[in-house]
Length: 167
Ligand code: FES
Image (cartoon, rainbow, N blue to C red; front, side):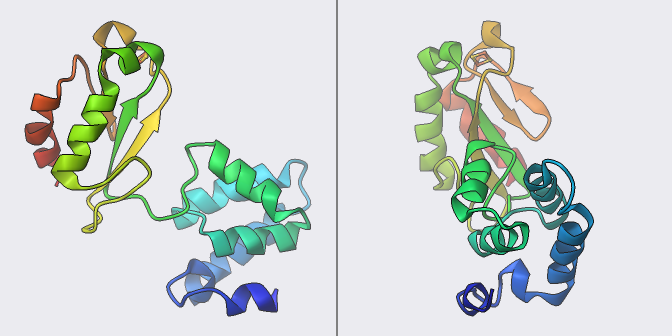
């Protein structure tokens, strides 16, 4: 554990006493439950807002599971993030209908406008861009979702005005 703690920046939740207390409480309350890994990671994502790489190492040590297992879970499920999400989350559907309908062009245009790729957050912390699977609105492809608002029949030309509302 000392090695893990030596390698983390002061800004990591593990080094902030209030957040460290939450992490330790979540681990203590759940580490003996069946499926503890998922329960702990879900709680940390909800309560801390993200699961940094040092946090993953700490959880792996405490639960006595390989780091690769923790990292595999965090990477696989889009619910988990390794950095804090922005105030708003923009998700582009990459299901077949949306992909064929122009989702890659929407992502490219978004990068031109706000400067971030999927998986990244704008420097001012206002918007995180993500991709997702089919959201069940294929007839309106290509679609995107911002927080809880769905936008269908999207076109790159519509993006500046829409994104502007969230910045
Ligand atoms: S493929 Fe995008 S909504 Fe179904």
